[in-house]
Length: 113
Image 1 (cartoon, rainbow, N blue to C red):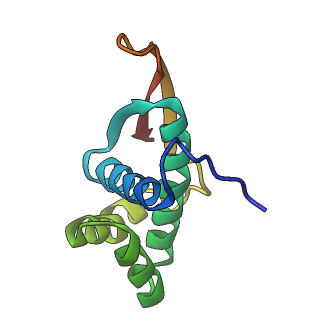
Image 2 (image 1 turned 180 degrees about the horizontal axis):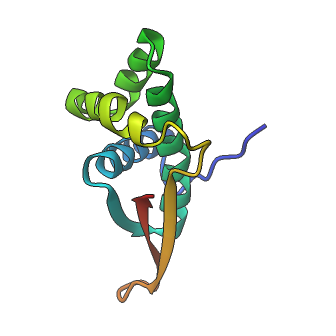
């Protein structure tokens, strides 16, 4: 059974936060966040790109159920999936930045490769 990080949030807040982070990574190509959030978001970004590579109606509906913006889903299925068609996973990269000044939380950049 896969173990998920709780990230100090109740389930509904955690799920919505991960949906937002996933949508923003797919929109902008990269985000800056904490290391633990980046590791959890990476899992969902990889799943969404894999759905985009499948390209069928069921995969599109699953992606629409998770990603917040229909334009981003179209971008994933039309552009991003074609970029990664020859790649078997590993669509994202986490680069550690150091600690945040205010609370010394370890920060990272999550970006599409």
